[in-house]
Amino acid sequence: METIAVIDYGSGNLTSAAKALERAARDIGLSAKVIVTGDAEAVAKADRLVLPGQGAFGDCRRGLLAVPGLLEALTEAVRVKAKPFFGICVGMQLMVTRGIEHGNHAGLDWIPGTCQRLTPTDPALKIPHMGWNNLRLTQPQHPVLAGLGAEEHVYFVHSYHITDIAPADVLAEAEYGGPVVAIIGRETMVGTQFHAEKSQSAGLRLLGNFLTWRP
Image 1 (spheres, rainbow, N blue to C red):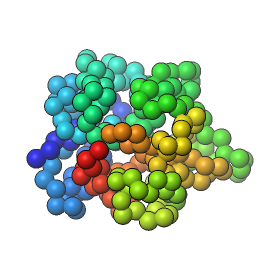
Image 2: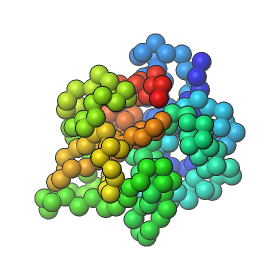
Image 3: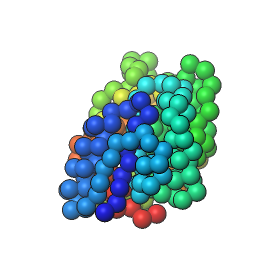
């Protein structure tokens, strides 16, 4: 039985993420143990890692740093031991090089890119981008996207988005007054700008695919 650690660093809808992962595992008949933890040792021992996130980029970064040993354990697990990783919302944004939100903040720099304010070309579009939107799969062959349709509906709540990222690292986009990076991925890492745990069947499919992914 694999252990999936939902990382608790004081940010993110942890209960919803954990319950969605449990439901996704049941749906595919997978025996998995989902834990919510901020303990560095537990994170180091987990087989798969999920990093939710809500709020400002800089605050979430500081939250990770504030938990003794957590960032080091997470980095070693993902970047050295190559354990599968799933970032959700700000948890995805933290994967890139830097975030420009109330200042300039260093990200984890696992995938080159910038997180900056969303600026739709249509001034009638409100910020934050909130609600259901269609996905356009740019790399439908990726295993985590298996079984998803051409225009799945998923649930967004965000005011910042990823830019300056290589097309090879973009798995899906949405449209909101211009293209918005919706899913990123590289090596053993994936992340969604939308809330996979709140995206009903499409989100459960993504999470289920992640749980069986062997990168």
